[in-house]
Image (cartoon, rainbow, N blue to C red; front, side, top):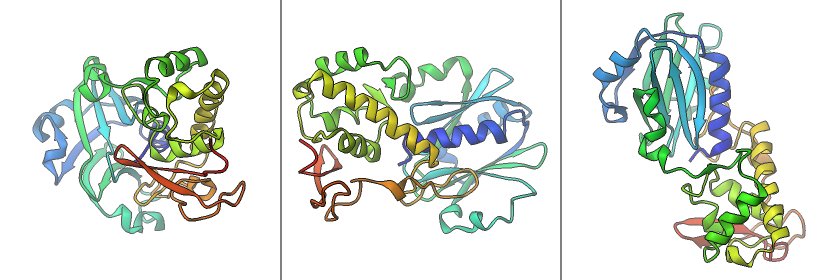
Length: 282
């Protein structure tokens, strides 16, 4: 599933490519994913201009000039492609993962925003801009992982409140901190030298602050690589992210640790796998 860096990559690219464009038409072949319905969606967005793009957790929000917004969640395998006359024949768009187009927004200048989603779990909703913050999947989000408000003091308070949780589980709880997924959880804990199964309360203040710094550093580093393509994710040009080229532990169980050579291990925490080095992490 696309995590914060992948979603922010898309939002940043959409800001450059579709802001200021007017929506001319909407096409969909998977109506269950268009909310409230295709007819209402069309009524709310056709003729409107995109004035801003933003991210809420793992949601993409396109604000329109008519006081409505389009909220998109990519879910497991979704990604957005922006095509125009100059790039429509790009080799990247011929990638097999870019062939599952189920929804298309066409703009007045002929540019298209295409939603490719192999497993069809993603969705898009047209709703009043004033109601975006109250959408249940957004209202339930905790503080954003890259927010300036997530300070060492705030992180201390979170740890103290959720001290009985394993740190690996706490970091994935989107109601506490929004945006961290399995990939970047494993990488941040590895870089911090902390085992994912440790109780949050066992971390010293110095370890907490070092972990927070690493979380933000890993996420920002991933942004410079346009996120990670662990299978399906592609950016709006149809290209893979490249963070997978510098992974330390994620998905590398049975392979040597890049720091010490010990074999990377995997453990289940909740319903997700965490990857770690039993020597470098304690």
